[in-house]
Image (tube, rainbow, N blue to C red; front, side, top):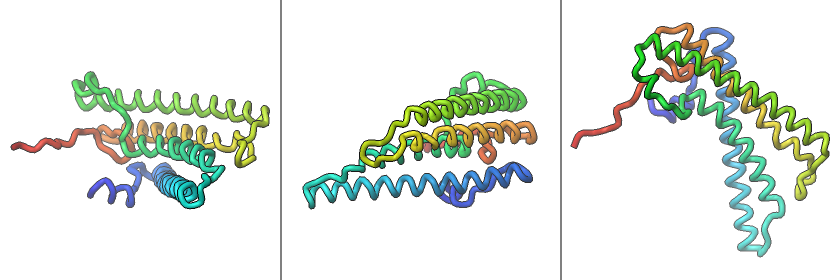
Length: 192
């Protein structure tokens, strides 16, 4: 199964309600990412057409793209964690036996989960500060704190994903990078 096919048919490796929650979040992330990218492309194309055919740019394009970039970025961090696509520095990790790698992966996943929840907390405080200041977007005219709602949501989803990864590693014999990605390297070299 290719990566594209696995993305369409994602099924969590967790049992019961946790697996259902993980699968639901995965579907919501996919929808958010797809809509965000399509809207950004449409907005940018419309702005280019407006600029060259009508001689005038759309006044709101920059702000809309800013909102979409924030949305895509913070929906994407959970997606990357779910598919085991995060950055790994694994020199020590690779030298450990399976039990040591699993224990280290549990520790890493739990620590990362705590950091994500910590960042979610502080991003909520930042949003509340923006709300109190009453700042608005100049072109669109709505409160600026609304565009940052994606930040704590992305951190919470990513924190949950790392927590689910720790649970998966505690309940399985293999080492998992996420709930559905088994640790290992694909040999991509071909002999000439």
